[in-house]
Length: 415
Image (cartoon, rainbow, N blue to C red; front, top):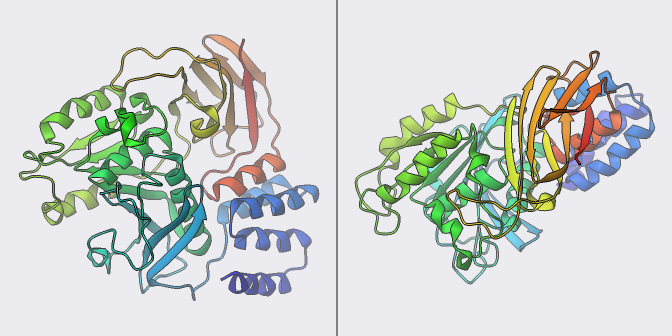
């Protein structure tokens, strides 16, 4: 695949005169964020005009029409070791069209053996044959469970590869899960929700994430579900997670500001209702497109290095406050930031946070006018901010997302 990607680079460079265009072509075919970051540094050294570079990144790469389609088996080595996944790409894939991406997290994650290529960890891959989307079925096992950072890294890497090879609609990425996979969906929604437009936790239970014996890494904060769309389904007679036991969590999530559709179904711990719900599920996806740069942000973390970022907010350093109350138990201190943005006026409430960074996007901020940031009622910054090619390329290399491009980093240090 590397040679094929370089072939398009050679073709592109042959038709372009400038070094900038050559480096951009190389940037677009780079296979991972670290490789893109190295090329980004070289672009920064050329002093390319910001507006030109920003426009090129918004347009994005020219996608090939001879990429692999059908059922693909991928593997990669990450934080949890070797991870396998099955990817279904429509046979009639059109590189000009942007495609929705759906991840499907399977149940039964307590298996000891690592899934291998050719194994069937999702019962029916063929259920999604012919569906006009890119479907991804990653594998989990006891050594890398859905509610651990190794799987956050795994799914982000898979999405990054898809966005490099295929024309993905970055604002139409959805996360499904069944049983343990459904519980995993809750984990992603509260710990790593930047990429997703919506969540489908089926026959799972968020209370599993309260039990340290399940291997969960990180603490759960229901406030991180503000404005998150969830489509929750549980069986009324499910012996593990009956709908009546999930209902209090649904209500609490709604009170925090999550947009939850709850669809209890007759029957037990199964998904026999899936076909009858399919039209509602499809409509839910059609109705929810991710806002990559939301005006209101609420994010809490107990570990800034691992879980400190959501969208255009980065929690850099915590002072840490004791967390009292809520749905989930807490043994660590945490910090929370809540943001309301109205044009160039940004109001922040911060608790247990020593330092945070705002990533400012030209699509949302007028850089020709002053910016005002208040934190807990005190002015933290007031004045103009310069656009930075270095910042633009730094985050473009990390995010690989045409709809999340940042022109400046505004770091706020609190007393």
